[in-house]
Image (cartoon, rainbow, N blue to C red; front, side):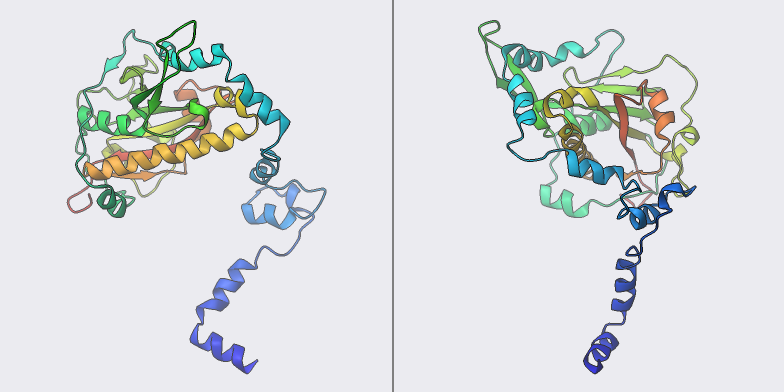
Length: 313
């Protein structure tokens, strides 16, 4: 005991760390009936067979049983058929050209990867300075723009090739769509738009001419939303990759979100801009704004972007 006391005397912070780590070890049979299901409440009841645990835990337990899972193999095998291959090769047909806004070519970034990675920080001190359309196009292209083609010619279409994007996607299915909510973008009215990577264009989501109200879709006390340049909403189309990967589709989609988000933050850092991922948003309000049904298409991530105050970039 003397040795333990001596050790803790030199490292007093360990008692607080241990206390925090062990605060969820108690079990409650009533966690499933509490009015507010705080995470710690759910964890305290997860060992009870009659109490539901985290939905996330259920997903991790069930999304893939093994690498030899027959259901997974059947789903993947279906996508080697010529019709599935041709569908991927002609994914650009899903985009709309009518009334689409053509974006300028992306800027070639000259900042080194090490510098961009080490200098990237979350920033909330937006200045209100307008973002240019070229800066917007550069971020969007680096996020998930088309940067190559994979030849997959078939007897029906010898020149077929699958367009490849800057962020990886399970099976090359790209179930994540990017929407931009423009606030202070030079030459772009305040509205919501979908980024169309194949044509490098923006398609306005709604014809509503009223200015975008961030108060209805986000909860934040430390960001002046009137001063941001624009925000990005990431939406997941459940059936695009779940038809191939089943319950694993969601996991693969969230990995894709991470890849896209990393590209966004590295690109805006290289441009001298700031940004911040935002967890406090009204999912249902955003989905209504972006015409997502909230059943097969969901908002899964949200990011603020713009120019910072002097010394904040």
